[in-house]
Image 1 (tube, helix red, strand yellow):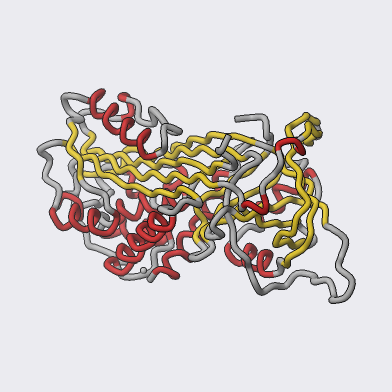
Image 2 (tube, one colour; image 1 turned 135 degrees about the horizontal axis):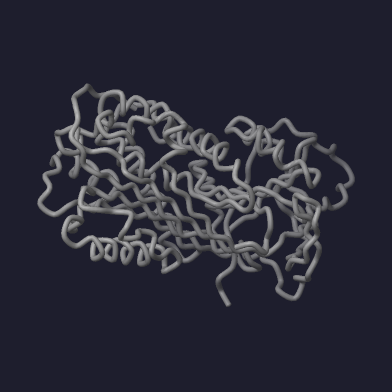
Length: 411
């Protein structure tokens, strides 16, 4: 079996409907490092909202940022300003979209090798016969590789849904299916924007878990209940750090371009406090103090699927006009004020087992460092209570996926 810590097909869908409206003026948003910083800030802002729900959680902030950046390309006036602030887009439009597109291309190229699969795909699904502005469709295709595909939402709603779902299944290796239901679109739908990201990798050869070392061990849930879960084990050298809030470890994937970071709260009930402290700055501070150290690592196998309707969440985060007929301004798409976002759907899947995922070393730090001399005893990293994890691109620092494991047995 060669599946291993399979990280995640993910899909974001934005559905636009038409509605008559008014008129307003444009706004602006920026180079690759700046784009990554903004995307990562949005990642933690969104996590702060989604974490309010109980249980397991998994999503791709990168996928969501990319799809909304395509949407933002057609936004104007107050709608664009709200989106830019919410999504932390801080550079001129042409710079932003060029940088976002370059990031998509870079990640796709990196995934072309044998060490792992990483694919980002975008598409626009427009009502056949509806006139979108050439400047919009050409820019989105050039920057994001998102060609405009014609479907008939008005007279063939079910077929349109089937076409979109078939594309989604193909792009995510059949891990995400039937994300668009025919009832989610109607005769007023004019545009569906899709972004899919698929990632699958083996752990670095030197850091794979042996199946025979996996044993059922207790895992303590947030309410104190104990359940038995398949607990993987290995004793190896990892990038590792610890402080008063948590232990943190980096698990490398084959190829060393991507890695999984696992953040384990000190005590069973400490996860909410740790989540409340999450930010780009805190993560940089925590990872900056990591050092190579021998670790006895216990990590549960888990599989999870999460699906969200993000319209209300995004509106609450500040981009409210985009969802309101009459206030939304997406005149950069079609030259009118008729379009508004009808729905934003995101779905993600992840499986972690003995064979796989990816990583790279991190430097700097403000953590306690052991002095030179005799090697320290192995640290023990026992993920036997709720924890956080994220998968990131080490070359650009892009956070691709964020997850919370509350119960390894709950899919």
